[in-house]
Length: 385
Picture 1 (cartoon, helix red, strand yellow):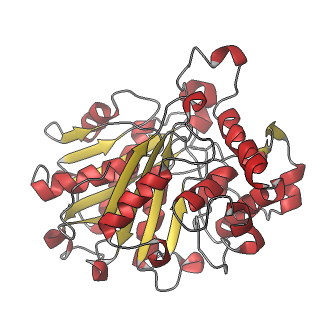
Picture 2 (tube, helix red, strand yellow):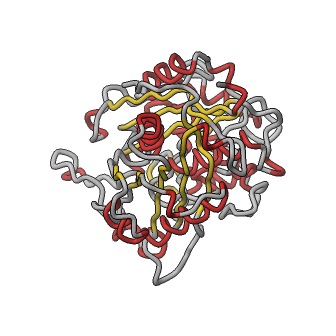
Picture 3 (cartoon, helix red, strand yellow):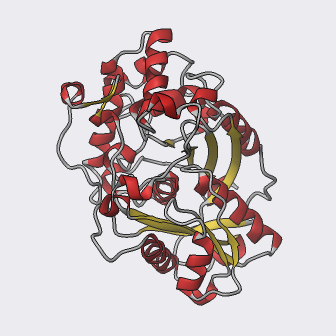
C-alpha cells in the first residue's frame, strides 16, 4: 500500500526521546510518551496548546490515544492509535502528514512509551497466541527470527560470523551516541561466545530490553519556516503486510520490505543509491541483513557479505543504524519511532561524532510482529522538496 502525499506541504519540526534505559518504578508508558511530547515541542518551540492531533501506540495499553489525550488534557484532539507493532510509527507519521495536509489538525504529535524493562517482559509483551504454533512451545519472538536466520544460512551460506558483524557495527555506532545503553566494545567472537537464545541467535544477536519513549511533531511547511529548526519532509512511504504468525510467512528469507521499499522509492522518485543514511529495525541481527537485501542495497542472498568488514559500521560504505540501533542503543518493545528520530537528527546535522557528512536523504524502515508488517519511509531536508 502507498499513501497519497502532497510533497512539501507538511514537515517534521521537532523530535525527542524520553528518559531511556531503566526508568524505575512509578513511571507509566503514558508518562514517557508525555515526556517525549513535551521535549519534542520544546525542540521546535511549540507548546501543548498548539497540539490538536495525537498519533500513538504501545503494547501496554489498548487505548493509548485516549490515555494520552487525557494525560495531556487535549479533549478535542484528533486521535489515531492504530497498532501494527514496531512499524506503527511509520504509519502514524504518514497519516499525521496527511492529516496536516488536509487541515484535519494543525500540529500533530507521534508518540510512544514503554516500561518493559522495569516491569518485565511477561507483563508488557503479551503478543499474539497462535493455537497452531502454541503446541510446539516457541519462545517468541526469538524463535521466529531464528527460523529466518537458519533458513538464510541454509539457502545462501550466511554464517554466524556474518550475523555477528551486524551486532558489532551497531555497537560501534552506539559508542558514538552519548545516550546509548551499551558502552562496552564488542567483537565478533564476543557475539559468538555469548549465551545461545534460539539457534543460531545468541543474546548478542538479540535486541536490548529497555524502557523508553519519544515523540515527533508535525505541522504545515509554512508554519515550520518560522520555528527553531529546519523542517524535515516525508518524501515517500510504502507498507506491506505478508502474515501475522511466522508459520504463515510465505518465504522466510523474503519480507514485505521488498514491496514497501518499492512503493516508497517510487513515490519519492529515488532509488537505494540516493539514500545517505539508513535505519532498519534491528530487533535481531538477521533483520538488518534481510532488510538491506529487500530494500535493494544488495542482492538477495548477499546480505551477509554486505555487512561484513565494517561496511555498515562507522567509516564504512553505508551508514546503517547510526544511533546504535535496537541492538545497542535502546529497544523499548516497539522500536520504529526511534528510527525516525535518528533520521531527522541526521538530516538536521545534529548527531555529533556519529554524524553522516552531507546527509540529505534518509530511509527509515519499520518492522512489526514477526517480520509481519513492513513500513518504509523516506525523509529529506528542505532542499529535497
